[in-house]
Length: 235
Image 1 (tube, rainbow, N blue to C red):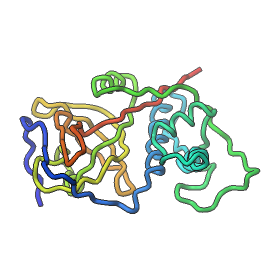
Image 2 (tube, rainbow, N blue to C red):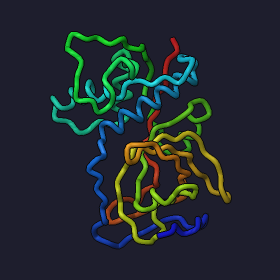
Image 3 (cartoon, rainbow, N blue to C red):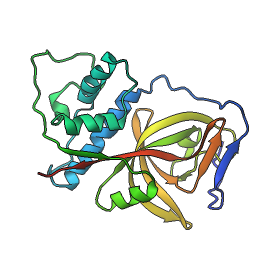
Image 4 (cartoon, rainbow, N blue to C red):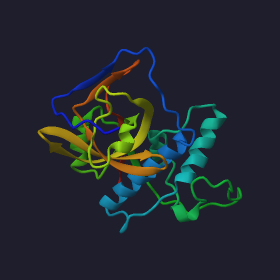
């Protein structure tokens, strides 16, 4: 299957099916994905503010362990990027990746072990739309989001523009955590440059901001939703 050429005049894909074809990914871990994106947002923000002299990797597994354990006690849902950011900024900080077991590790440090925490303070901003995201990107290096993912479009995208489905057969994968790092225009239409966590790695996409979809009860929606960003304090 080849992707159709990008049509700047196409706006919304609509399906009249009562149920969408869903592609399940048993290896996708929502909590790990949220933690990975959260620490990447923190690392980028700290570097931009010169709180770190180089891009520093912070522990995603620490967030999974600490934030996740409190939610499991309360029988709450999986972690979100916002959950992880709130924890890092309100609980005094998180350790560097080197000071905690790697992501996915089953071994846990003894309860007496207290890692050195990198102090972090600030607030979590939740932009309502892409206009607010653009304003934030003037001063912030990146903004978190969720991307509606369709297959096989996500795999075939490569250097093309990600538009979701244009009406051809597709399977809806679901929402995936992502990072918006900039915007640009192609053929007069706005695009977001996005790093999406998919199949256990980041993929860089150009997401068409003019596209919407309504797919078997999902939508109508734009492709990028649920924005958040850490606004760090330098005090």
